[in-house]
Image (cartoon, rainbow, N blue to C red; front, side, top):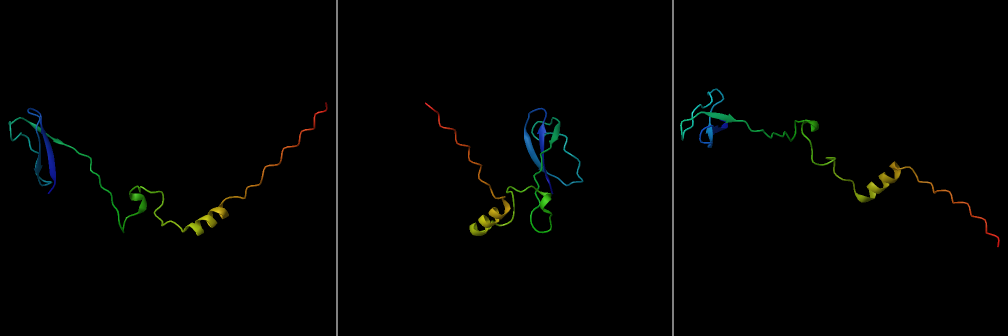
Length: 98
């Protein structure tokens, strides 16, 4: 059974009530007898585990794969990056005549 939160418009008291889905919302405050309204809360549901697609919920990490050992990682990085060519040397300036 879900728990619903209500707020009284007269005395401002908040209270929770266990109710079935089929039950009508409460209309009166148990402490003062004034009208109440149901408070809607955002629900945080995250489906994780087997049987769910990875894009069903955001992950906190960039990749879920286990990190590669350092030796393999450096070899992979070297193969993936293009080789850098050294910049051409600047031409030598002519010697100034005195």
